[in-house]
Image 1 (cartoon, one colour):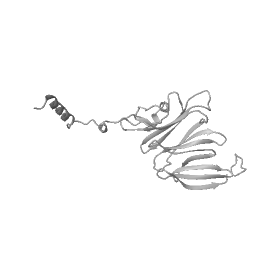
Image 2 (cartoon, rainbow, N blue to C red):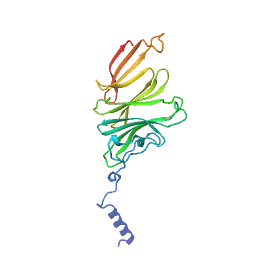
Image 3 (cartoon, one colour):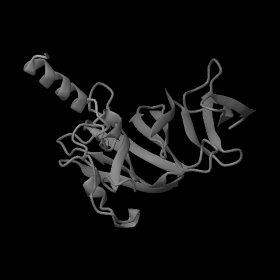
Image 4 (cartoon, rainbow, N blue to C red):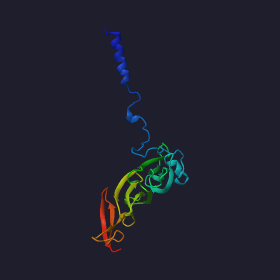
Length: 231
């Protein structure tokens, strides 16, 4: 005769392995993704389901920051807003700055959420200004952002970043002086203009200007054309 205690264990095991509702993680609704590496203090979301023209830029930056610029974009994944800011302080040339890309979602979570951001803390080479241009530079028919973080200096130094606003992905980044990086329309890509100095050239007056057009070839930037001209 089976012991009553063992019988109870058999019944319990059968109940646990029955055909009831599964509680595996794959069947549990997951929270909306929140990108890592966003600037400190950036709001996690904006809860009003409104168009980009009705979203207050001040609601998309850290609480103590002031908006310095905002740009709207249309991506393959939905509307997007790019917003830059600075934190007021005693020295306007040495202040914390930042920029973030927000996108409209229709997945049941918060309507507006940040998908990418970058902080520029004041330090040894503080950023003096952050500006952006909206254009399709990857050639996929969706708006991207070309961002310039200026560090100043006699050579107009800075760092240029290109961000795919649909995915919140950094697709290009370079730093330098005596150069500009802008969107290129035909073909879609980036146009880099940089000074070319010969020995004896004054800093004001380079002998040549080299213009290079870069195109995105599946995640790799390749040279489409190069032209050197006299200023």
